[in-house]
Image (cartoon, rainbow, N blue to C red):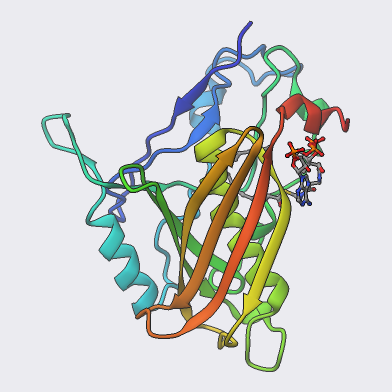
Length: 249
Ligand SMILES: CCCCCCCC/C=C\CCCCCCCC(=O)SCCNC(=O)CCNC(=O)[C@H](O)C(C)(C)COP(=O)(O)OP(=O)(O)OC[C@H]1O[C@@H](n2cnc3c(N)ncnc32)[C@H](O)[C@@H]1OP(=O)(O)O
């Protein structure tokens, strides 16, 4: 049994023009040990929520930047054809891989309550609201991030660790698109200006170079209109085998 990586496309009423992310296809994986009774499965379990779609907590600047990039995304026309666009919106879920080893049922190895750190709060707008877009022609990744009130560090402003988390998320995704599974080996951040809670900021990352297992990425975070630089950062990611991560070696 082989592991396959598929582009996942998704659509919603709230206007995602296009989306693509690499996930492991679990349709060919072995059934879980206790499968749902026939007939229940399709109607009973809802689709996973895509957290990168707009919700009512998104403010005007978050929506403006979302629309700016989303309007440049490829889309499926009414005739079912794909219209090309330079950007793709990357969907975002709160769980990682259910199956990844091609034969081993991972839920036995990964805690079933585990959730992606940035997507584990049900209170919309309270923590990390963000959406990522990728431009393959220019090899650029952007993140639009609205910082919620539970991310406070200095009074009224965003915690440096939350800022680092968002940088790692954008550049980690970019490095994964560029090189497959990677881990952050080194992350350097210059914090230039504090970010007020509730503000929307723009993160832009570029891959500088690849050297064997190593990929070097840079990222800057600015105010939503680009006028203020909040951080500039550099990072090193190292390619790994997923099995290395799972087996803890
Ligand atoms: C895997 C899942 C993929 C999922 C895909 C999802 C799609 C996107 C979806 C959702 C987005 C979410 C995105 C979140 C992203 C978050 C990412 C993180 O937070 S990662 C957690 C924090 N990082 C760690 O815990 C690493 C701990 N460190 C290690 O495991 C190892 O040290 C590792 C893998 C980094 C390197 O170990 P070695 O054994 O594989 O490789 P060696 O031989 O040591 O190094 C290779 C080269 O790199 C250099 N190197 C390694 N570490 C370095 C360092 N700190 N500074 C400078 N150089 C370093 C070495 O000198 C060597 O260079 P020479 O080849 O000799 O030129």
